[in-house]
Amino acid sequence: MGKRILVQRRGRGGSQFRSPSWIREGPVRYLPMSEAELNGVVRGVVKELMHVPGLNAPVARIALEDGREFLNYAAEGMYVGQVIEIGAMAKPMPGNILPLGKIPEGSMIYNIEKRINDGGKFVRSGGTYAVVLIHKDSTTVVQLPSGKVMEIDSRARATVGIVAGGGRIEKPMVKAGAKYYRSLAKSWKYPTVRGKAMNAYAHPHGGGSHQKGETPVPRTAPPGQKVGIIAPRCTGRRCPQIVPRGKRVWASGYPKKTRLKNKRTSAMPSE
Image 1 (cartoon, helix red, strand yellow):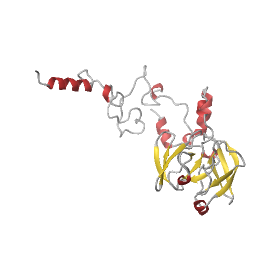
Image 2 (cartoon, one colour):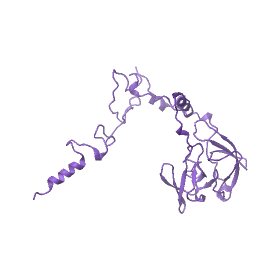
Image 3 (cartoon, helix red, strand yellow):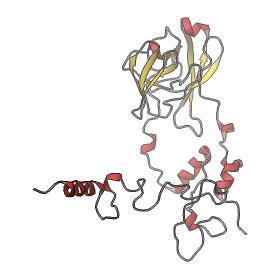
Image 4 (cartoon, helix red, strand yellow):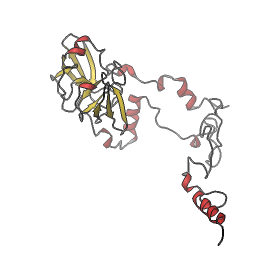
């Protein structure tokens, strides 16, 4: 008799697979936009810079003059006691939060809203930043760290500057214990064991005197069987997912370009 494999248990979402959100300080997002922000500026003060387990950048706790508080990712150079301006009339200085339409072209920004009042969705990792390229009628063109260019509503907000905590991934893990404790904060299932290396009762790929691959499974396979190569278009050396089309060798033994060239040559009339 077998057992429920890891894929099934992950899908069920038990306690060891759930994100430990209870150890975090709170959601890192902007507050809903107020009338004062739309037409003027709201000021606040950085009360605390802190590390939040599971997040890869420092977080700043900002207290506004009207008594409200929220969390935002800290900008490089931010310090406790710094005055933060929020709104359409705020200065485009590091740490200030402005609508995209009010930020000068060429500025570096982060924590960009995808839609108005969603709290910030893009560019939130340590050391990253996006660049404001150009302003249009009602939208702003922004280049993300990946190089992708997006057109976003000019009323959406962003923070000026670069996310603090850059260079975090340059330090190697060195030992398995470091990755183990990181996986606890991120709710990863660590370590990841290959199905081939398991026993037959624990995985469809397990068992046998020698490790071997497994045949593809259909899209409609039951959960305990749906592992490995799922519903591929094709497999083998002629598969475009494995071999680029231009370098594929056909049954004739020649690539497609060579076959077409030979076909045209043979079709030309002889003199």
